[in-house]
Image 1 (cartoon, helix red, strand yellow):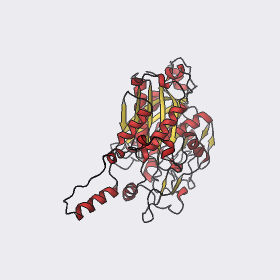
Image 2: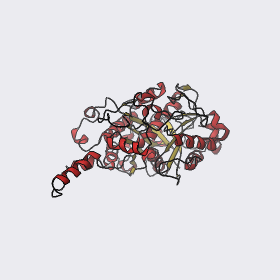
Image 3: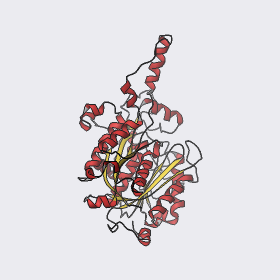
Image 4: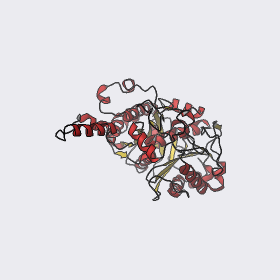
Length: 435
């Protein structure tokens, strides 16, 4: 199996318009949650979200022909892709385009609720004698695959295109599937990540009715997202995109690329429990984490940081904590565990991408970003969640978690890019002890 390097990263998030700004905000514990501005939410039970601020589509994607059929979320994805490719440096363009692919998590296309209302009014007013018409391009704006294709085109990818729709685990599954394509030799390079923008009134209404988002902090948005805190009452919706460049290790070394980290192992499972709730016993999250560690050949004691899914819903945080304890045993007490969602809100299909940025920064700088708003310890949650202030510590290896509605789970393990010999081999003993 081929080794896999991460050579580029790009982002558009509620805390930064690029990956560097996003990491700086995470390390500083800055929140990007604010009052909703994408529509008038004054009469809604939830009036806050993690929104991307200052994003100018014309600046990020200057060509109007490229912007024409891209949704807000897809524009984020294209901007993040271009940043990631620039970050990957020169030389990736020489890879055979048929050995380049893309794997992208995104929201399934659907009409806006306002369109459905307009359609209903039109049919009622005309006595159902007139068919509701819309511009053909409007269909493309809602198509998940259009955003994925835009990502692939930016990288000149003519190999496989994998469009993943697994909600909150979308970008983790996309990264994992890209990892597999390179491991198995099908591709030398993959663009992988996710994009989403669940900040429409349809999304806010839907998640509010479901009881999944908090409605207790409209007066103080920055304090709303409270993973692992005793006063947590649901997650905060967010938006953004994160795209990474994954490459065959030897190809990356041959072209002199800077390697951010090595992708070591990946696991994916299903709870088969409930559509919305996480099982209290940790369920499939245990298997996903164990599979990622087993494939990486890391002893659990070699992992120092878990970039947690950490949504801030009462059940998820208990389930994830239970799973971490079962996977890591006594070493769970030595881990640093934190949730970037405390600062960005929940970017759904792009959420694991933000966790990837947190893990890369921790590996590179020896700084673990905090879980902000963790002011009231919950006696049921007794791990080190790095409350409120970043922690300096060496990080040898990191685990990224993503769990989604429907009960699907994904985890992947990372080690620093320069931690192993660059000869494409890895001994069993080395795999067990190095990170």
